[in-house]
Image (cartoon, rainbow, N blue to C red; front, side):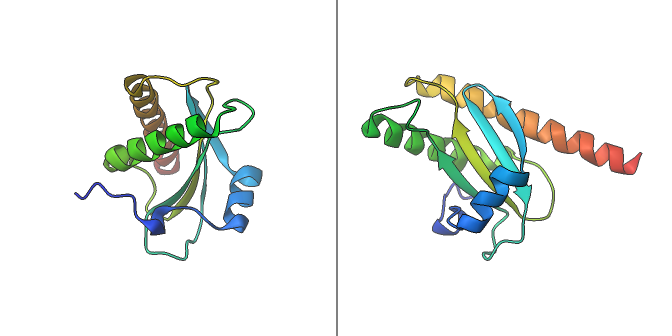
Length: 130
């Protein structure tokens, strides 16, 4: 498995971004939340992801950019752990904290978020079968 975050995986469509925030399902695991929808993407990737760090909670642009870099790195290194539907998805990964945190703390929160996402889809698929 190649641990890459290609340009095709970056969510750039304003239409999809608005649809995520209007109709998307939300899961939270501090310090992150993820909103996602099943979507037909233009690219041949499993999911496209937008990384969001609000200016309201992190005032310094330098710190916001650092957090976004760390979040992209967390996704890049752990995306192989994400299980879910076979159809394509659009994600918005949002930082919920109001200060910088250690990378280990961020990684722990991200892994918990992936676990809750996987549990959500296991539960959903078992309801469809049963």
